[in-house]
Length: 361
Length: 192
Image 1 (cartoon, rainbow over the protein chains, first blue to last red):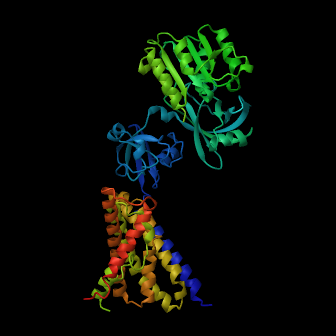
Image 2: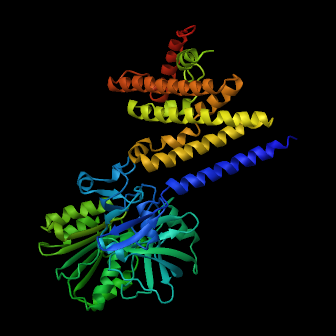
């Protein structure tokens, strides 16, 4: 064998590696850059990472369901100064004209190439990453599970009733968001109500693989959907399926305050098989005259002997509410259901600024 | 062979896209509009010319050490490295260009024109100047080809031409390429 073969090969590989390292050192983005968040928080960043990753490294967690692949459109932020040029084709579908004009971008697609000034919603600064252990799992119905995550000793999470958190599925690193169903008073635990979605990666994991004692990374809290605490309007809550989660959190919070506001909660389901936490809520309504729980079935079987309300949730709401001019509405569920419910509420003269919703999709 | 002849023949008579049918993958994928085609073309011209010039002395080294059988391997490594360095360079100094190139730049590593040009100069025993001319002209020819195809496709899309259903999209591009190849046969024998 020619002795030069390994010499040439290794020599060339080494030379090229050396040149690449040198070039990277000389020209790459290894210099330190400063990111200023909301004018007051500043931190240095090195490397060429995206804004999303850079913020993560500095313990600011923007919501991101897709994990930086520009498919969920949740990690929006406002770019004030700096950045790397124009909106990329990958961001295009997620930005409205209004957002473009004010400089909104997707943080997973913008790289930190120099000093930057950015703006993110103040509530997101509260979001943190928590290492949790699953300490309770319960089957609520045939396709809905309650999962409780226990935070590490000494750690606490502060969230407003109605907000959501994200869990990271270990192994496949899929990130999904679920509303928190637990009482915000309990700062050491988080509960989520997770419905099995056929072929859903995260829900399949939760339903088929998740076991007590598993360690799960949770980030949160996120979301603009939460109880308006400074208001004393009457409340209409409408939610079906796993949409019960944020409402449960809200109701538990109000219960601790002695139920100061009138609350009507409409829970839509198909059959009695889909009902859960009925006892808990019925008991509450017996305890507090201010709280009314109205489960409604759209498709009850005769053998179920259902004596409650029957019909589509929109019809039931229409039938059982009066004038809503002074009321506040909280809706959770599929986009289709929410849109239909908003129409019904508008029929009852609700004011748009008092309608809050969380579209699960 | 003098340099002018070499230049013209690599550009037209022996156009690397239309007569050697090389670099088809990006040529078909990125020829939907002229603007992108131009971007890809320029990137290819830069990379091919650079790698041609870099690979020549490396080939001399291989010849001196009697290890020419490593040429294929070594060329690919230098091509990948060149593209990488170029990417870092453009990213740093020409951020506008970088964002408009986007994915094209790393894609060039796998464009077979780049490797073919390096292998051809070996086969044809070119000297350094000839290699440089050949690399530049071939890549320019490829750029011309992708722009022509993109132009035709743009026109066809604009007038909503009546393409048979089974050929809509990439199918008709192959036929366009075939017709263009035939047209380029007309340059045979051309010399200055």
